[in-house]
Length: 65
Image (cartoon, rainbow, N blue to C red; front, side, top):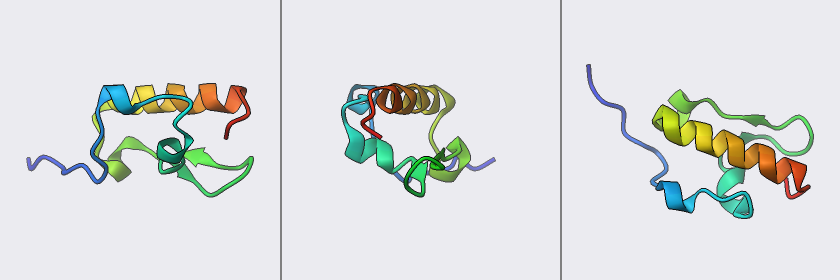
């Protein structure tokens, strides 16, 4: 099988709940109905996808997103 290429290049150190510009790239739409985009759309490995999801959830709790 061919390995998928990442559409967004990032490392674990870039993922931060306060970095809302980066986290908005992983959401569909705006507002309350925004959903987290699945890993196969961006080609991220599962460990980075989990960290992105946790950062988005923390940012929502802080009312940043």
